[in-house]
Image (cartoon, rainbow, N blue to C red; front, top):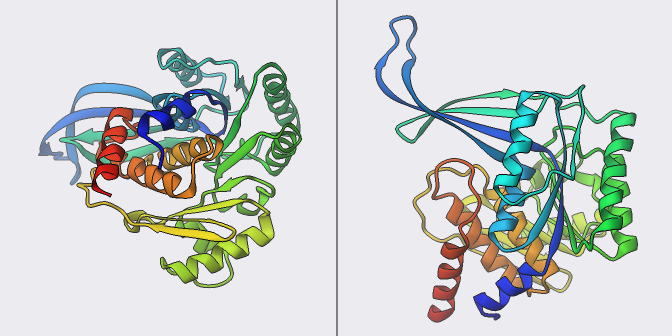
Length: 330
């Protein structure tokens, strides 16, 4: 197994395109001391408001935390939220060169109301229709320019079913990546589950696998191997990684598989854990790590972010400490 410093050195050499649905996560925090006399709901006394990058933006933040150099590629609206989202990128060391403003589409905004570290309600403002023919052409042209201008090592697709990753966009970019010998990884959703033909790393969760395959799947080795074989026959990918919630994850490449159990943790919030897992797994694949190392690091990282409140990227220091501790105990 590689040392943590060697892994981070490999990650730091990678330039990554993150393509998919970006959104803004808005957190309104307050204090609850009484129930409303108008309805049986809590009255939240406002204390603070914070905007964070979500969706594909959170994948980019995870990649930065791990030392890689991501470029976020997505569509945002020509609205106040789009301006605010674009302003967040430079604060985190991200450029806006991969963002395309599309006046017909509002910027996806998820507003969470929190009190005493509890999630009270979430309000979503979004449009999930597919990009139009003209919007698709604009988006693909922007990404093609980046592929020509930059030395890209990896493309990560982060699909939240908000319409950016259409079958045309997916097929075109995987085709370009194949020609340029660029590794690809995807965290899919059900709508385009079978559209990612030829991707290198395919990372669904157990629910998405169960919803998409024609036979029952159990979170145990034989059943997951059967599912991985079925998916490879249809998609032609190389590595399958299936997250199993509190059961950990399953990783498989033809001829080898591994179940990686979850560590005991105090779970605060599972939001964003999938973003973290795909970030670590994709970097591990592109960095030449073995499947055992990919499984262990991805599982640890996903668990660590579940200990935090809200959608946050993995803390590199915490991840390295846990990984190094596990090597000493082995």
